[in-house]
Every structure is written in C-alpha cells, then in structure tokens.
Image (cartoon, rainbow, N blue to C red; front, side, top):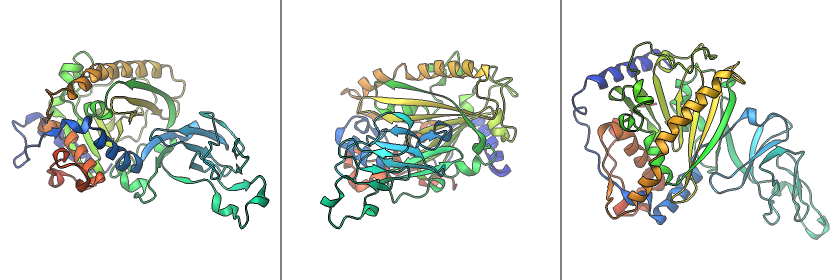
Length: 402
C-alpha cells in the first residue's frame, strides 16, 4: 500500500470520529426489497449470474503439497477437481468424464497418478489430456485431443488459489483491485495455511454476509468482545469498482495490541494500517478478510439453498506460525466472536420471510451493503431483475478508483 493511500485511510477514520451527519451530497439510500433474500426466482438469477461467474477462493497451495494431490470443490454446485500436476502447476477441471459424464475422482481429497473413469475406463493424465479409450475401434474418426477434461479457470494471488466458471471473466488480478496493490508488502507468497473450519447456519447467505460489511452492530452483538477495542464510530468505508470495498476501524486506545497475538510471528513489512488498526476487505462477492501483521484470516460465505449457508474460516500466517501455541487461543477467540455474529441469523431469516418485513433500511455507515447489492444487479443485468426487486443505482459517484 502506498503512503498516500495509507494516509487517506487514517484521515478517513479521524473524519468519521468527528462528523455530525453524513457527508454533504451523500444520497439517501433506497430500501432494499426483502424478497431479494427469499424469492426463488431472484435467487436463481443470483446463482446463474453471480456465483457461477465470480472469482471464488478455493484453497491454499499448502493443501496440495505434491504432484497428484487433489481436492474436490462443489461450492457452486458444480463438481470441480483442483489438482497439482507433474509440473507443479495447479489446475482445475470439471470432475466429469467426457464420454458420458461419470465422476473421475470420488474421494474428497487425496493423491492420484491420473483420472480414471470406473464406468467405461476412459483415462486422463494429471494435465487433463485423454490418454486411453477402451474399444477405440468403435469410435471412428475419433481425435483424443478434442476430448480432454473440461477446464475451469484457475488463477492465484500469492499462494491463494481462486476459481471462476466464467471463461470470459476478467483476470483475477483485475477483479481484485485494489487489494493486490494494497497487499504488496504482506509477503503473500510466504504465508502458510494454518487452519480451516466450517460452520453451517440456517439463513440465506446474504443475511450473515451483511453483518461483516458494517460495524453498526458492535455495541449490541459484541459488547464484551469486539466493541471493547474497536471504535465503530470511527469506522471509515471505501467503495471500489467490481463491488469490492474496505472498512478500516480504529482501535479505541492508541497503541492497543491484541493480547492474544502478542508473541506471535509477524509480517515485518506490513503497513502500519494493518499492524495498528483493523482493516477488513470484501472481495466481491463472498470473501471477507481482516488483514493483520500477525496473519490473514479469510472468511468465505457460501449459499447452500434459500435458507441455508456455510461460512468457512481459513487462517494464514508468516513463517514460524505453523504449530505455534498461540494460534489455538487466537482461533478459539475468533470463533467465539463468530458465534456472537451468527446467534440471531436463523431468527433474522424467519423475520425476513414474514409479512411484517418489507425491506432493508440502511444508514450511511451501512452503505457497503447497498454497494454489494448494486453490484449484484449490475452482474445480473438490471433488465433481468424484476422491477419490484431492482436496486436504484446511487453510489457510482461515491466509489474510489482502484
């Protein structure tokens, strides 16, 4: 992160702490229709145009340690295998035989020397090329080169691997802007995978994701935890293109350090904004990461249906973090905070489905939620969204260039 950007973030927090009202000229946000969280037809549009066409975090390179190491990935409903090739490159393919669609790998994770279809015996190498076809004589004019496994786009930032089922999507590095530039001093290539866990919640995925796009709830939901050290009134939000955003929240006391992180290995080149304050990014649509000098946790939010979702929590730290005794305490404390965030989610889902709920009325400091929904309509195409469910585009002039 360059010095000018960092200084503006510090100045933004100071301005938030002293303002008496929203900035002059900021628009009154329109009500977000509640049916965007419940309507089956709208959620189908969301799956088709958002989840199937976005860059989504998959795994860390540490999770595929050797050539032939693989993992199955089904977050969007598609069966995808992510595998390290003999050349050490990581690739992704649909786990689907090109003959009649049978699965090729059946274990969730493991190691293999290639892909073999147990239905009819077609065989592929680690790079997805078709290498053997049983009864080849019965396939006249057959060219094996035309029947390799179907690729899924697979790109990396540091050692993080992302997938996108849209062959026409912009490159990952463009979609993530400005995060790659902001994180250039965070030594992403050297971070190790520490721990991952998953939690199933009975609500629409947006119900919980919304909570991680604002700090308005801290005093109510986290009075004995997060609110004790973060000043929500100083929370400064920056909106970027592609739906991405940043929320920087100052500590209540200057020089405050997380007691659970004291003594842990640190990224010694981390900018001060990450080392001394709380900076939380949303890489659209579903990745939230509060970047810190002691490491980077990534939360990813996944739909499992209209009323069910999963949140995955992944931890990454610098050299020396793996096996460090303090990580267990840090993860435990974070999961306690996450439990506070999720406690009302099923009840909120009940409420948004009731006749008493007409829509979401947002404040200025909840504008990241409105920004998120604006981007959703852009990706679906406003003309494809039913008129009664559309979001009025209001924030384009309030976005910062990456």
